Image (spheres, rainbow, N blue to C red):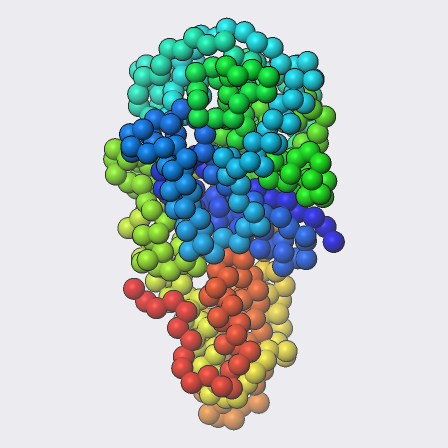
Length: 478
C-alpha cells in the first residue's frame, strides 16, 4: 500500500476562517478522499498558527489573554471544518507542547549545522503580515496587503544562511526532485532564486508570545519559521513512528502569497538538517470577491458558515471548487452562487438522479450491468480524463468532465424516452434503464470526494430502490 501525506497551510489565528481558507482546505480534502478511495494509506493534516506579535496585539485589543484568544479562534476553525466535512487525520496547533518540543529539536539541529549566526538587523516590519518587507514591496509607502506603514525595527536576531542552499534548491526544482505546480508558480520560484535572496531571520528579539529560542532567553523563534515546522512536528519529529512512516510529504497545498516560504525557505531549512524535501507543492492562485480583494474594510469577506446555512455543506464544496481553475487567479461572484447551484446541482445532478431513480422504481430495475455502447465509450473517456485530472490535482477540470457526462445522460434520456419504450413494451427499454443506472453509479463514485454526504445518500438510495417511498431530492431548488 502506498503512503500519501498531504497538508494544508496552517492558518493564522487572528480571525474566523473565510472562504479563502475554506477553498484550500476543501481542495486538500478532496485529494485526500480520492487517494483513500485508491487505497493509499493517506495522512491529511490541517492546523492553526497561533504565535506572534499580531496575535498578542489582537488579544490585547479584545481584552483577552493570548491563549484564550487563540482557543476561541481555533474553535471557529474546527467547527467550520466539521460543517464542511473536512476529513482530516490530525489538527496541529502551534501552541501545543508537541509542536514546541519539535521546534526546539529542529532549531537545535539547525544550530549544529553551523548555518545559523547572530547579527543586528534594521528593517521594515509589518506586524499584520508578521514579516519584514523591503522598499520595493511597498505601495506608496504602505504594506500592499494591509494598507498601513510598516514599523522600522532594529533587532539583534539569529539568521539562517539561505544563500548557501539556493543553488541546490534550484537544481532540485529543475530536475523535478522538488516538483512545483502549476508551471507559472515554478517559474516564479526560479525567478526569485535567480534574483538573489538574502539570508532570513529565524528569531525575534522583542516578541513575547512565541516559542523560546533554544539557549537564548532574549529570543523567540520567528513565527513564520516555526509555523513551517508544523509539517514535521505533527508527525512527532524527529523520532516518531509517524515521521518515519509519512515524511517526506507527498503534497503541500498552499496559496501563491506564501510561495517563497514553502518553495525556498522550507526546503533550505530541511536541507540544512539533512532531511528529505517534500515531493510536491501545489500552489493555488489568488482570488478576489466580486472583483475586489477580500478586506474587512470593504466588507466583502465571506464566512463559509453563512454559505453552508444557505446552500448546505456539499453544495458549498462544489460552488467554491467549480468557480475557476485553482492554478489561475480568479474572481468569485457571490451573486452567481444561486444561479450555479440551481443550474448544476438542483437542475443538473439532482434532477438527473431523480429522473433515473424514479424510472428504476417504477419499472423495478435495480442495477446497471448491461450498458449501451455509446454511453460505455463516453464513460470510459470520462473515466480516463477524470483520473488524469485528479492525479494532477486539477479539481476544477475533473469536475467539468463529470458534468459533461451528466449532460450526456440527460440527453440520452431525452432522446430514448424510456417511459415511452416501457409503455410500448419495446425490448430496448430495459437496456436503456440499465445504462442510466450504470451512469449514475459512475457519477456517484466520481463525485464522492467532492460531495461526500450527498453522494453517500445517493448511493444508499440506489442500493435500496425497492423500498423507497419518496423521491430523492438531493439539491432542492432555491
